[in-house]
Image 1 (cartoon, helix red, strand yellow):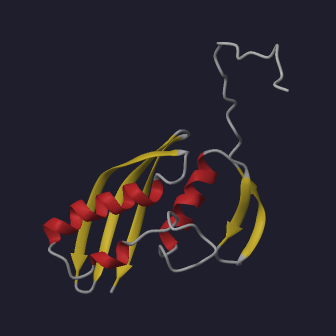
Image 2 (cartoon, one colour):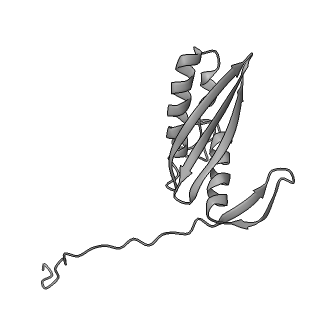
Image 3 (cartoon, helix red, strand yellow):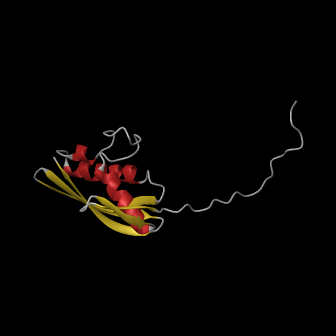
Length: 133
């Protein structure tokens, strides 16, 4: 018997903003030292994404982490465009991060310094990432 009387109403669906509350990780003490929310939470998430090498740890999905170490030894012109793409791809896996802007790369010897601005739903912040070969 097929149920009758039910129908789908046409209306708008309202999505509630989910909190970004997470544990605060103190890298110096190697301890969880409380909680954080908002922009500070996004900053910690971005730092954690960039410290995790993509495809290396089975605990994370294949979309989590970054591949910046592959940039070592590339042509400097190519390096900047690839760094921008890799940062955008890695960081926008977090729904709170909208994009990456103002990417500046500096190659010295066997290391690469990348400076950029992360744009999130809570605001923007500057980050620096160093990649060594």
